[in-house]
Length: 385
Ligand SMILES: Cc1ncc(COP(=O)(O)O)c(C=O)c1O
Image 1: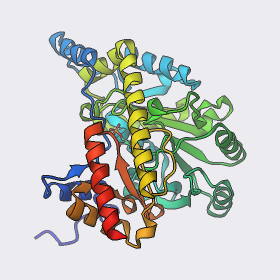
Image 2 (image 1 turned 180 degrees about the vertical axis):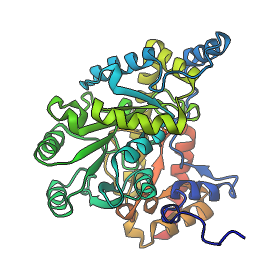
Image 3 (image 1 turned 90 degrees about the vertical axis):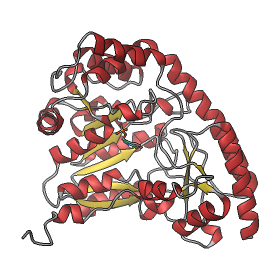
């Protein structure tokens, strides 16, 4: 007989993502409009599909090098340079989505009980990955506009002596971006402290300002920064599972060990497809960015007119309006919104304690769906008043 308690303590310590949990409930309401998912509603650009088919036909279906095909790593390196981020092809490892990248990085860095500063609210995987590996999560709160609260951050660094800090802009779930001024402040803190930054740049192609800021842009702290990126959002290829990690050699050697024993390499044909994306599909990327700005404008204006308080999302494709004034927990609010109004949004609490009092609306949906959902939400909150 196998004992009851066979599951590892670390796994028992984490839960299934609140986003998925809520998404599973939505299935029971077939007429509901779901604004829950974090994936663009655009098809994969044609040239990317063609390149993938061509790779199959040319039998490019064997293992690639662990780090991934040189051609793609060179394209990523060139692309990052346009964002003033300098990583050479040998400092880039192609992963199975940013998800694998994040897990590899945490596994490469953390010993049991090492502390990791994670913003709240944040993408839930950070906290779960850290716990899975046995690290200790220390949350840092954000300002009202979801920018970094530097005073609190400095206090926490002095008090808790964390090994790692996760920085995540453009942000899922808030849509906030890193300003130039905050980037400089962060740089100073990283420079003056013994701490490693994991910068999640998954939405870097979806920044609505002309200028993109990232902590990975400072060459003098390259030895303290690891950047994680990917193509799920950039090329709308969520299901094709491809991303990348960038880091200096010292980190990369360790990350590569985890990556190698975990997956060997990312899917060969998808690597060729992403490579073609850089060569032929940057206009598609720009089209999607503009379309998201148009939808953001529509949704934001509707919500403000309804009386919601919200920051203006400046990147990614999420809005994170406050629902505190309705005197309900975010879970209850979203349950009622689903049952009574037929609109699904993710409760802010799914993104950690800092998300309570908010809901996440994804606007990776058509204008028609956004309009209908807004009408339904308007009716719903009228009844609540
Ligand atoms: C902030 C953030 N980072 C990383 C990921 C992982 O993306 P993927 O594994 O699809 O590349 C996501 C996915 O939603 C995300 O929102």
